[in-house]
Image (tube, rainbow, N blue to C red; front, side):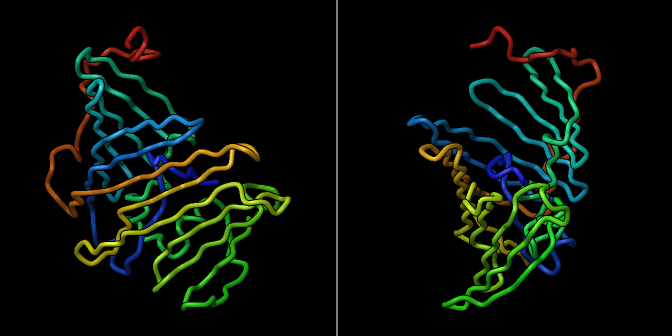
Length: 236
């Protein structure tokens, strides 16, 4: 099932000509509410159509992360010239909102990337359209996913388990046009960890730039960076 909130991570793209865009940059703020506590993470993101994603985190310690659709991940701390590297599917940025935007997968919100197929389409009150997706391989991922569109723009997703209960919800709003694309600047996800508890993640985007020439798109970890297993070990 796609990551809901990373945002880094979150999902979307709407535009027939989205694939014409090659680069998107934005400032991102992610607030997470869990167990009565709120954490806030701010970063700048730089995504290329190849799927390469660079994020810059400035507080409390300046560091960079670089990921790609194959799950390759690097975290670099310039203050100590240290780098942590790993590779696993969880690190893949295939479901990152900006990557989906560049790859033109707004029709199904990237669900086909995870093996889901369209099962039904129905028109709801107010001109809404609800599409239901199920896994191509039964038992793999969510049992059912509902996608609701308004004016051809995704505004809501719900993931169901085999028992028919909703395990997570995703809301997309505050759409704004950038060049020839529409992008939601507010994304809220709710994941029901238990019957009595949930995790709420709100992601806000601002200062979106399409096809800018910022050098951070081509950021590379210095070749002399020291490999480490835990770059934040011993830090407060």
